[in-house]
Image (cartoon, rainbow, N blue to C red; front, side, top):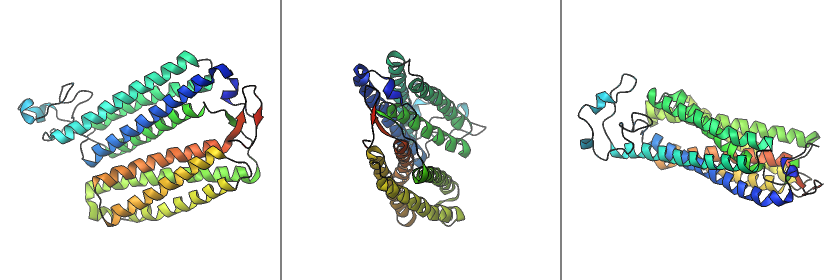
Length: 332
């Protein structure tokens, strides 16, 4: 039986573990605020609202009117051989707020990593997950600089979204280490269903990437052309494959002879998120392709990938560990 991290922690440190869990989930939530802000920037096509990085028009606080900029600002802040876009205060401040939220999330990460190093640096697995977050955050920041420098190259925009997913999962893994659980040995049908769940998670990721590509087509080709493309029909039909596969896995979680309390909760949340995402996609296809629905659709996609990951984690890690190191089956 694989020993869990929590079984190494003295009972006197468990209150600190609970504080760490709350802090990790707080950072996890901050990352999703950044997702909402970034999605709003994409919807408003405000990615070049601040044509330079890390400043905005060379200023720490961006202007509120074009009169505050030099007359040749479009030439001075040209990007990739293109003139800077005409000043739009809405786009500029949308991008600026997105950057500010990223800074707040970064401060939250520093607090989380500092707390782990201060209280739990002797626990290597927890230290690994926590330390990987700022490394991934720096990589995402550099990628954001490249996105601006390349005038919103689509492959970099998509890669930027992938790094956001990595950050949220790392924050969850820090929180997951604070639960008094250890891995159970999966055999037979349980192992097969766990692998099926991972297949569903990968297909969900493919669906999110298809949606990101379709949004870029909408921007470049227009709504009508994009919604008549083969990509749209593949994306729409593929969603039912994802729903069906995850619904089956969700059912199998409830049918397990072991009472998987955490896995059941996260599976239910994931099912609701995926079904809601399909519903929002239908609204976008047939009624309104407005900015609100596009941001919500993106948020639901990344949230569902996180909650599905949590389901798979708690499907395997489902044995309660006492402070003494013993464990009781059928609790998690």
